[in-house]
Image (cartoon, rainbow, N blue to C red):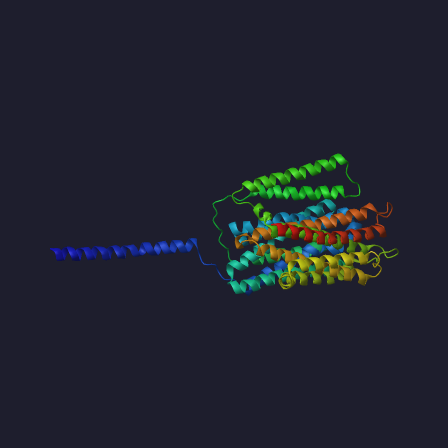
Length: 496
């Protein structure tokens, strides 16, 4: 009797184990569906991302050498021309902190393809623009391209091993930088051989084609579950703050000016939007930008120095193409758009090289030394231009020196700030500094445009030579201000 019960018990247990196996397999299969291993991507997919980055870099920089041409074709002032180039930067400042988080939550490929649709619409609109307002709208939409880099990095990191992903990210970044050189070189021949509309349309066609290739080749990356809602109020308030600030800047610095009451109203609007954004971010469970990051000495020191350095560089970047384009029967050179692109190319190369070595130089010589040397080089170069701006090579050399100094210093500040925060906060810290860098360049360009407009001839609309001298002095003084900021932040750090 006991033997039969024992055999029955063993038979029941065996049956239970047998019946449980399918359940375990179903559970395993269910887990595999929920958390699939990432699909590896090949060289063709990486190449598609790289060529897309090349086309984006080209579209971003075609405006720089063509600004004098656009002013003549559209009949706009220096301040309005500065806004054409700044529109991309301002939209990019608003998009940069958002794109990465959207990519993490909803999938990098999904967000990238939709973002490229916005950029393509902007490029086509700029290519068909009959006037300045339509061109500005196209530039605003094109600013979404800034979000393509973090989204590309998300895709590379998700679908490649650590070692290969670093090479993939380097390739994408290098091709984006290379695209800036292509845009600088090709804007002139395209605008002069066809029309300025085609310098927007041709890169846009390449972007559309490569976006379709990326959508076809790249696998979908799974979204990441989150218990918190996306911080859309923070996104809208930050975007509104930046746009109101830049609108106020261009109106205040424009050739027509604004009455004091209007200036005060704009200032109040910017302050109200900024205050609302800070209040929202302080209460958000998952803020777009963690404001506690700015309390870290490394972060606010980096932000303060970055905006000073990039403001000076933004002034240089706007003044030199304008001076190249001034008719040669006076103090200018009467350079064509193609010639201006060639003159700016050494500066673009210097900026690309300095961006890549800034972190290495800072580790070798120290952050303070890099910032101080960069400030001294830029200030000395600008002061030299006060009297030495009668030959093209002088301006070419000045542009290259300023680009090298600004690139090394801002990259060094970026790497030092991100090293001072936790790994999980790297994206937030990078976003803050990207916004700061873009805002500084836009502020510098718009300030330089205001200086030129203030001393423009009422008949021809051309700025006087003294306006460029004033601009060079102002850019040098702003660069020298970095030395004071370094001294102040050093004392603050010592007290902290």
